[in-house]
Structure formats: C-alpha cells, structure tokens
Image (cartoon, rainbow, N blue to C red; front, top):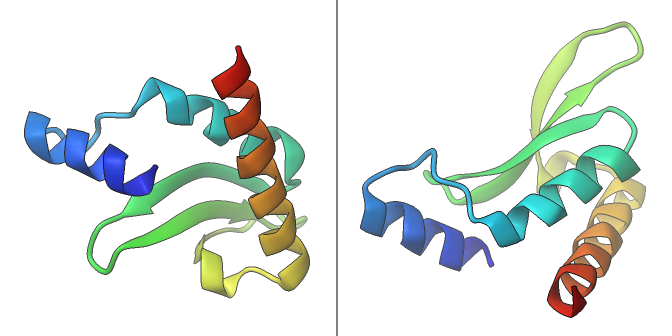
Amino acid sequence: MVALNLMCQSQRQDFEYRLSILETVRQAISQMMPGCSNPRTLINPLRLVVTFQYLNGHQEILSLSQLSDGYRTTLARDISQSSIYRYHS
C-alpha cells in the first residue's frame, strides 16, 4: 500500500496527495493507539512515521523502528483490521 501511495504521489507530482483507501488505516491508527497521530510515509529514507505525544504534551516524530514492540504489534493489527474492513465495505 505504501508503494501504491508513493506511485500515485509521484505520478501526480503532489507529495501531499493521500489515497482514500489509506485514510481508513490512518484513522484506525490515530484512534487505536494512544498518543499516536498523523501516520505518514516519508520518502528519503523511505519509512513510516507517526507523531507521538507524551503525557507531558511534548511531541516527537517517531519511525516504526523507534516504537516499542507493543506499539508495533498494535500498529500491525490496526493496519490489518482496517484494510480488511475497507476491503469488505
């Protein structure tokens, strides 16, 4: 899905373009993972990142590799479930 999103962005010459099918995934991540918001793909180097807000209000952009095992597992589950939901809707 990330590759498809990047291909569409490149073809359109618009790197702010967002595939509607991935909006379901983005919404699921933001709703199901406390403190995580604005999931997105950065290009150089290619990686999935989220904005993480700590309890003290401080925000930090974290790549998938910087998240704990629990957050990565939750993220994988949310992406899978939202993709299945979107596919069957």
